[in-house]
Image 1 (spheres, rainbow, N blue to C red):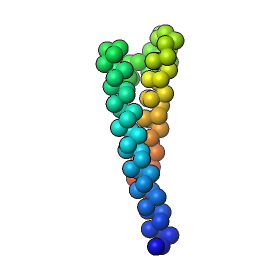
Image 2 (image 1 turned 90 degrees about the vertical axis):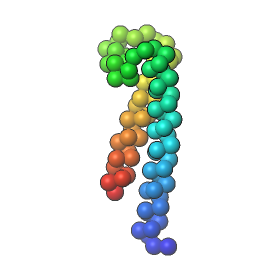
Image 3 (image 1 turned 30 degrees about the vertical axis):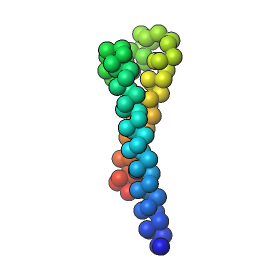
Amino acid sequence: MTTNQIIHQAIEKEISLGKYLLSGYSEKIKLFEKKYKITTSVFVRSFENGKTGDEQDFFEWLALYKGKKHWEEKLSALKAA
């Protein structure tokens, strides 16, 4: 196996992992959107402006949003490689 093949395989594996994680993040985010009846973009703006409470759900929701955003950016870069 050549170095290029190994690198290509590693990139494909990382892309596969990223897609799996994105799917999980998206499903969990949808549950929060349904529970609180707002979109994630509205929630994030409200959270960042200090207009939400300190409930554990809100910190988890924000972490899911940031994780999803991170993997979207990473997948975009990996697919461009």
